[in-house]
Amino acid sequence: MVEQLFGSKTRVKLLQLFYANPNRSFYVREITRKIDEQINSVRRELANLLSAGIISSDTTNNRLYYEVNQDYEHYDAFLSIFGANTKKAKPVKDDAREGLKALGKVDLAIYTGTFTRDESAGIDLLLVGDINSHALDKYITELEQKEGRDIRYTVMTTKDFLYRKQIKDRFVANIADAKKQVLVDKDNMLGDN
Image (cartoon, rainbow, N blue to C red; front, side):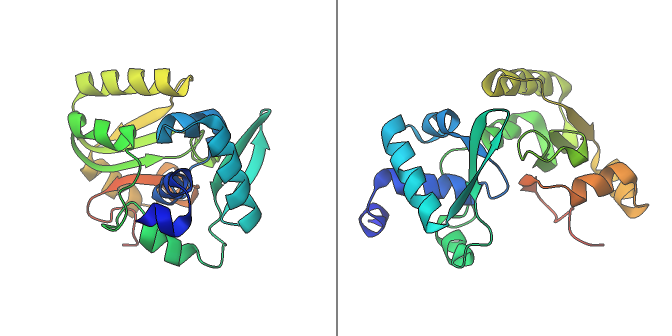
């Protein structure tokens, strides 16, 4: 039904991908893999969304990246329809969120750095909680293979993270200020004290 309303199955999948990952940039081949659609239809729909102002694009290292335009006038309405936390739309499966379940008790998981093209945090992935180190090694190896690059990551206990946040530790403050995609935030750990 949503496809009929928005005119295209590919367009709906793109909107679900972008609104479920609001601070993440994607390049065309990555998008085609994630939504499992033909590259020509993906390019056509990206052009439509770009011309409507729903997404924006930027070139980095000779690659064209696309991300949702959070300044778009109907951003909040689209987020309520296509965002990851809605029941109305089923977001495109995110392997990162699925894989986190195997790591143990994850209270906070954040993509930043190369995932959001904001290097101010100094890392690409932050994991907070009671993390199984063997499962983590496997998860990071698979993520590096999927992304085709080394992943800089940090693991902390929940107690350590909350303490460092309380004392306004520079590392934690840099992560809070950086552009990020929150995968898990169980008790609003990023929120203000």
